[in-house]
Every structure is written in structure tokens, then in C-alpha cells.
Amino acid sequence: MDPLSLAAANLVSPLLLFFALGVAAALMRSSLTVPEAVAKGIALYLLLAIGFKGGASIADQALSARILATLFAGAAISALLPLIAFQLLLATTALSRIDAAAVAAHYGSISIVTFVAATQSVAAAGLDYEGYLVAVAAIMETPAILVALLLAHSKKKAVANSELFREVLLNGSVVLLVGAFFIGWVTGADGLKIMAPLIADPFKAVLCFFLLDIGLLAGRGLLQSGRELRLPLILFGFYMPLIGALIGTLTGMAIGLSPGGIAVFAALAASASYIAVPAAMRIALPEARPAIYLTLSLGVTFPFNITLGIPLYIAMATMPT
Image (cartoon, rainbow, N blue to C red):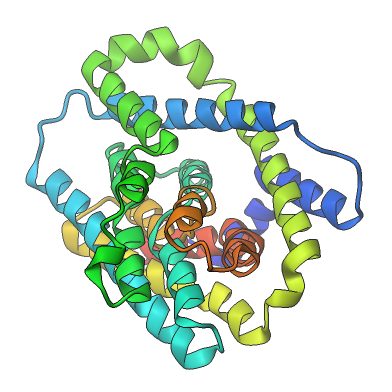
């Protein structure tokens, strides 16, 4: 598939246009805002819908070697990417070890909204993907955080923090995503039929509203903290997702995922967290600067992925071999 055609179609999709509206409103200092309670409710809805549909889609499948291999590969990539990101940041920027580790954690973990945008783009391209990639997304939340803490501190005792482990392992988004996945898996087609009026037709419209809020957050982050981002950091925000996507694409091909599954897996590896990891960093590395790690992941990498990155990853996954 032609990546330029896919990118052009993506640029006029409601998902991207609502995100762009949020960014523009923030940059123009509009009073437009989404109440925090509403935004949190929408996020919970999306996690429930994604998890449930993913579980229901594999209800009739046995736990195969491919599923286990994909789960293991997701965890391994989540641990590997912070190591790559950390070394690149130390070599190309003036960040301290603490700030570099905090940024690296974001680029090993995943953005669930990027994952959702990738699944919608894959479906729009006429491709199917493996439903158990929802479980892979949940697994990829944690290893990057633990690796980043080891990179930030030479002593292992810095990682042995019960509050941090609780934040990471019992993070609300992870609990809901995994819990809904297993409920969908157990109830199968019958459960999906019951839940369809809630999680099928309204899904895209609710996602557009959520992306409006994300656009507002990204735009305000750029206004408030953009001066913290020097050119080498901005460039990192563009090329690091490409490195992750390449690793994800090659891994997905080696495992034997479908072309749609490879594209979604690549998008997971290319994404950068801006929800779970910042919460963990506030506890584990309070001296790290959110103005850098949050603005970079949300203000640079996220827009890149949903505009140009995802069409490119779909094109990479569907190239003839």
C-alpha cells in the first residue's frame, strides 16, 4: 500500500481533525476545555471497550505458541527500547542521566491511544489484526519502567519501592484493560452481543472526543514547556518511534503475525506513553522534568505517529516479501 495515500486519508479522518482542533484551540489560548471527570470517564470507556473486544475476538482460540511468543516479544521489546533510547539520548543531547532515563521509559512503554488509532487505520485499510494484541499492549506497560529505573540508578535498591510497584502493576488503566480482556475472553460472542450497543457503534465518536482533549493537552504542553525541547530532543521524538517500529515490524514478521497484526505491533513499539509512565515517574524519579518527557511524548511523538507514522507502519507491514 502507498504510504502517501494512507497518510493523506489519515490527515482528513475525524480522529486526526479533532486532535488538530484541540491543538489549535490550545495554541490560540482558547477557553475550550474538557472537564477532568469527563476525560477520565472517556478514557475508562475506551480501555473497557478495547479490552473486551480484544478478549472476545480470541474466545474460540486455544492458547497457541504464537500467542505466547507475541506476549514474550512484547515484553522483551518494552525492555529493549529504553536501553536504545537511553544511549541515544546520552550521546546526542545534554540531558542528565535521570532525565534521559525518564524519557527512555516513555519510549519503551506504550500509548493506548496510538494503539487504538492504529487498529482503526488498519481496519480502514481493509486489514484484520490479532485480538490478543490488546494483552500485548498491557504487558508492554511495565518492563520499560523497571529498566529505566535501573538505568537511572546504579543501586538495585532504588527499584525496590513497594509504592512504585503498586503504581505500575496495579495502575488503573492496566487493571481495567486486562480485566476487560479476560471478561471478553470468558464471555465470547454472547458477551460481545450484549455489549455491542455500548462498545461498537459509539466507539469512534467517543474516541474523537477523547482526541480533542488529548490535542488540548498537547497544545498547552507545547505552550508551557516547548522551550525545554532543543533540536536534538525534537529529532529524537521523530526518529525513536521509527526505530521502535522497525523492531516491531521485523519481530511481527518473524513471529508470523498477519499484515494488520504486524502494523499494530509496530505501532505499539513506536508509541510513547503519556499516561502510565508519567504517573510512575512522579513516584520513582521525582527529580526528572515532566516538561521534557511529557511534552516530548505527547507534543512530538504522538502527533507524528497518528499523522505519518501509522500509515508508514501499515505500508511496511504490507510490503511484498
